[in-house]
Image (cartoon, rainbow, N blue to C red; front, side):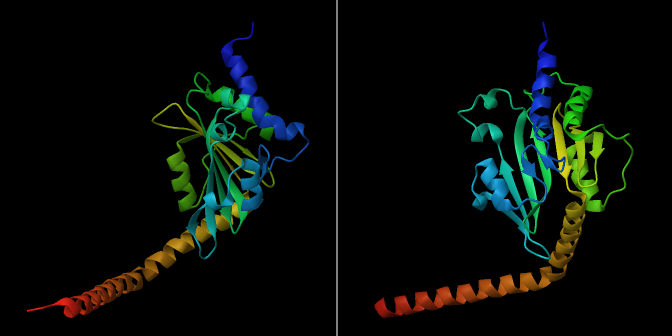
Length: 231
C-alpha cells in the first residue's frame, strides 16, 4: 500500500507537470505563460484584471496580481489536493515576468526538500548544482525575504528557484523569465531613485496643498458665518 507521503508527492508532481504532459514549453507555471499580459492571466485565473495592484508607473508600469486557487475553485475537488496557498503574478509593462508560489503548510506537511525537488523536476527538468548566485541588490533582497534557496532550475527562457522559510516549515517557488526579470529589476531601482530625487518637491507640494485647503475652508466658513452672524 502506498504511504501518504508518496501519494502527496505524486499529486504535487502531477499538478506541476501538466504543462510538460501537454507538450508545452517550460517558460510557464501550470497554464500561465511567462510573457503573457495581465488580461490573459486574470482570465485564466478567473479573477478581474482590476484586482491588480500597481507597484509603480515609471519608468515602467509594474503590477502585481494575487490569486488563491482554493478560493477560486471552491466547488472543485482540486481544493482538497492543491498544495498552493497563494500565487502572486508580477507584470512589467503588461508582461508576466515573475510568478511567486507560496505553498500551504498543511498541504506540504511531511514533504522533505528532496520530495519537493523531485516533484518540481518533473515539470522543469533536472535541478542545477546549487551555487551562490550573484544577483542585483533588489533581487538579493527579494530572495532573502523568501528564505533559504534549496534548489534551482534554468533554461534559455525561464529560471526557477525553490526556497524554504527560515522561521517555518513552508516552501516558496519563484518562476521568472530572466530577460523581463532583469528589466523589471532595473525599473525598480530607477523608480526608487526617482522617488528619492522628487521627494523634497512632493513634500513642498503637499504642504502647499494643506495651506491652500485650510485657506479655502476658512473662507467658506467666513462667508457662511458672516451671513448669519448677529451681534
